[in-house]
Amino acid sequence: MPDNRGAALIVFAKEPLPGFVKTRLTPALGKSDAADLYRAFLADAAAQYGRLDCEVLYFIALEERGGRAREAMPVAAGSLRFEQRGNGLGDRMRHAFDLAFSRGYERVVIIGTDHPTLPTGHIASAFGHLANDPDVVVLGPSTDGGYYLLGLGAPRGGLFEGMRYSHERVYAQTLERIANAGLSHIALPEWADVDTPQSLINLAEELRDLPELPDFPVNTAKVVERLRLEYAWLEAGRDPSIPNESV
Figure (cartoon, rainbow, N blue to C red):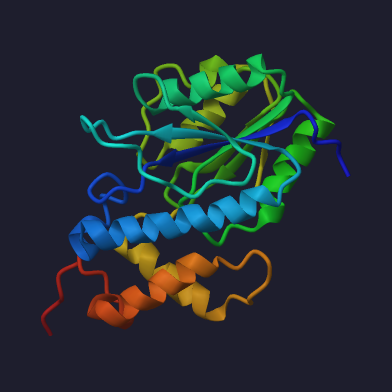
């Protein structure tokens, strides 16, 4: 087993406020239920990330509302919390990596909280790859063309500068930047983020067959079951954003 005393997991998260999270799901679920789902994602992620042999650093995006206290949110026990800083996602990720490396961590992995069924072993293997080769870049590709995880053994600001995100070529363009920097990469198994009605339908189906092992997302399963009973489109497995075809 690799020594993970120098390992840090950066978790990018948002305050679980209605209208601030899961906005691509709000037309189908409404703001309150979308926030409930995201809060369940956070709770399951906190349990999962707390089982890893590494430091956990939360970088939280705050919604600015004058005079309002910060929203309570589930985080991994013993984790550190910081506010996300920077203009755009790339700048915020670069800042988070720079801060982690400045604190002395040698293997740093960044991840989100939108993939509640992701096996813990995938995250642990990222740290293992970095322990074996600190110059490699570890990527976890997502099914929408982005990535759910990025692992580095040193600051690599060039991977983020001027990058545009939230499109289907983010992963491919990141691979190009890695190659142009003369670095090699290791790809983890592909996984899906849950941020659209169809991905929520897929999650509901997956949870029905998923064994209740330590990785099982208990909080997410409870909320998804409630939503399935309340929303006919989720129970029927029909994406409400796609018009019904007339026969």
